[in-house]
Image (cartoon, rainbow, N blue to C red; front, side):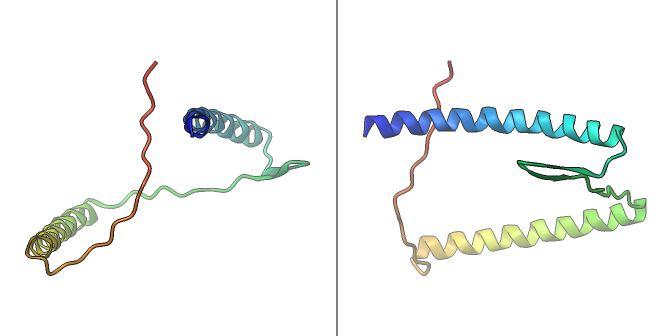
Length: 108
């Protein structure tokens, strides 16, 4: 069991490192392809494609309505949370439990 725990911790650390490296590579590859005017690249490892992602900017009138809607949603969400808490505390709601593993790496 000790070996599995050590392997899990190692993989967790590597996963974070790999995600960080991938993000840096994604940025560099994107910049390089765009600079060359290319839409992608086909390699023995797979196909890389550049796509356009839109970022929308809305009017102030929209922002006011959105803020009001979000406030309404939060209010309704709070009501739902309160109803859930009531059912949980009265025993009307039921639950199932199952084992779940969590891991916290030691900061070195």
